[in-house]
Image (tube, rainbow, N blue to C red; front, side, top):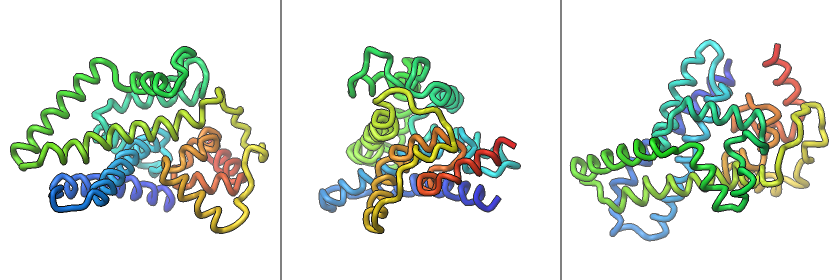
Length: 262
């Protein structure tokens, strides 16, 4: 229960950070700050935007929510993907469960179709699974309407909107695709999720510095879903911030999987 409440606070915290950073960056006087600060703000907004999708992803798996309050996962998931790109939560759920049913195979909406196997082609196919023609119209209309409102009612500069709302969305989609889909799945189907097969789990890094550096890279690249992607497929109920424990303590997978299945 305490762990699930912690996950709920993490989800709410990420959404809160996204909102606060959105407001602060939209009002940033670009002519009075250095390009380095602007670049850092774009990166921060991109990372938090990716966090919205990760939050929705954990909601789909109900991995960060108390069992007695599962209705929270639906609402937080809807809010997260709505803020991300006005995406329909139900479609994201269907796509993601199809992905887990056949990862890196025919029927996986996140995988290439055998034709669009190269990076840019695969990215286009990946995005198309979540943004259909009709959804693109909804996305464009809502984005334009909100942008006009922010510009004329709150005097937000167009450049701020592009730099801290539009650009982070594009960069975030590439972050999710490249680190969370392309790199883990480019070799094809994943091994079967045999939770007791310890050979699937690499050994601990050789020293503390290497371990810390690796975990930092794992977190910053895609909230651990790139480097620990196999572990996620083996134990999809584990929230993103606990995936490194699965890597370093493989018995955690078997223990938590058995608990959930009972």
